[in-house]
Image: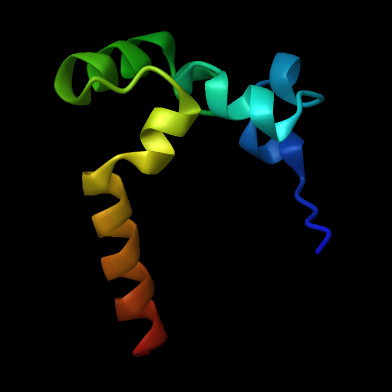
Amino acid sequence: MAVTAEMSKLLDKEYESKSLADLVKAPVSALSGVSENDAKLLQEAFRIKTVGDLGRNKFFRAATALVDLADSMK
C-alpha cells in the first residue's frame, strides 16, 4: 500500500528527502517544531535519541492509544 504525507509539515528541511529507514534513525530534532533543547530533555528524561526511539517509546505509544480511543468515542 502506498502512503503519502506532506513531509515539509513533519520534518525540518534537511530531512524532507530522507528515506523512512533514515528518518527513524534521525535525531528527534529532525521533527518540525522539536528544538535541540527539546531533544536533549527527551534524552535525559526517557533516553530518546532518535525519531524511532520516540515512536517506539511505551509511554508515548500508550498516550497515543488512549487519545485514539477517546477520539473514536466522539
